[in-house]
Amino acid sequence: MQLEENIPLAPLTTLHVGGAAKYLAKIASREDLVAAVNFAHGEELPVFVLGGGSNVLVRDAGFPGLVLQMAMTEPASVFEESEDFVRCRVAAGVDWDAFVLDVCERGLAGVECLAGIPGLMGGCPVQNIGAYGQEVAETIYSVTALDVEAMRFVTLSAAECGFAYRQSIFNTSARGRYIVVEVTFLFETARVVELKYAELKEHFAGKQPTPMEVYYAVRRIRHGKGMLLVAGEADCLSAGSFFKNPVVSSLEFQRLSSGFKEVPHWPAADGKVKLAAAWLVEQAGFEKGFAMGQAGISSRHTLAVINRGGASSGEILALRDAIVGRVRERFGIVLEQEPVMLA
Image 1 (cartoon, rainbow, N blue to C red):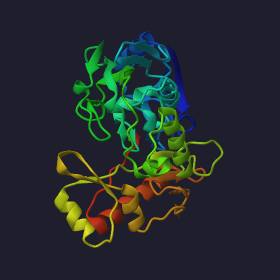
Image 2 (tube, rainbow, N blue to C red):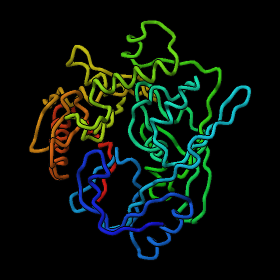
Image 3 (spheres, rainbow, N blue to C red):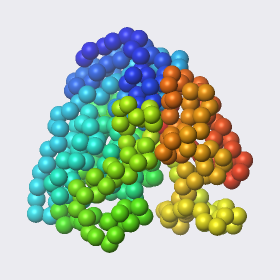
Image 4 (tube, one colour):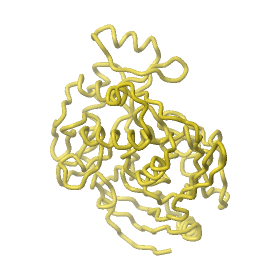
């Protein structure tokens, strides 16, 4: 295990914002992970697991504990085939989009709509990442993690992970208890692509696309919305969608929609309704390209808060609070931040 002190975290995140970590350890094996966690326990230090840095906001003061930079890439992707299913084990440090491409190239459906999402494998079950009508929980079979309370590795079934919209036990009831080291997926060989997102349906116009065709279409859509992190582009310094799409009751939706001709929405669990956070932000007066100091909103997508160049976490948070306050004032809805706060 390599342990470093006072390491700037901003360059390790896609927002390029924030201070330094007191300690940083690169984790290339399970042995590294155990040694690092034991060190943190011995020094009574808080621990934070950093993957690709695409869904995190670091405060300017930095982090007074140990940051674990996940670099576990073995197994990269081990595919085990049977007559009806393909099982795949993937290490936490594997690039998420590279995995999606590998799956789609094999003609397997189930994660094609999640193409272009930045980050590493270890973060996908934590957030239950989702996009364009698909969630990673649909194909996860189990998650192997270090239980830092018992200091042993455990394997949790998908049901035990408690997946819901943008959440799991890893970021709710058991936050901080588990550190993901490997994810196992199960793909049905007979499964075909099912399009739920309107823009994808329109793009393919009734055609039954292959997983690879959807993979490239999703990346094009994400790029057009500034949600594909491309180095050198003005909107690339972001954490992706900064706010979660709020889920409200059917009565709340009726109240909200009474004053508008059309309110973008989708059905959610238990008869509830999922609203488009981007639409709420726009209706509250924050348009694409809006700027507040060195923080701003992407010129291509209202949900992406960006670093316009040298922004502090304070500026990012000030813009966040302004948006949340105005949406609450106009609609009575409180937007929830998606990126994890590290302080």
